[in-house]
Image (cartoon, rainbow, N blue to C red; front, side):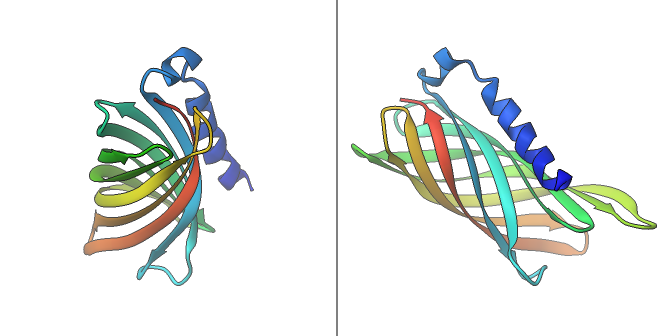
Length: 167
């Protein structure tokens, strides 16, 4: 349980540190959860994520992010960012883009305590649905290629969540 709560608390503390007055000035933050599927593991994994969005224009944002998933003997933390093109309408905003990130794997066990970091590239798309002037629900699909030792790991992420702030 501690392994799940630590990343959640870390993301929440980062996002709570964004001052209220900046949230309305083209900066928003989101928290979400979803699943990861890959040929490298048998079952889907729970993924937790948090991000900030910095509006550069009405149709372009930068989105730094942090995420986590894990299981019994491995934790994977990712830190990265995306550039997104937005197609806004009155209540729905479609987005698509891509980015890069670091994927830090931490293995632990009886005789094992190692960590490695790998570069990852991703493309993503999704939508935000406005439920008020400052709250949005979001959903996204993302494809990642992680350049690991011995080849590339490929995975899909399907996730959704809540975004606060922005224009």
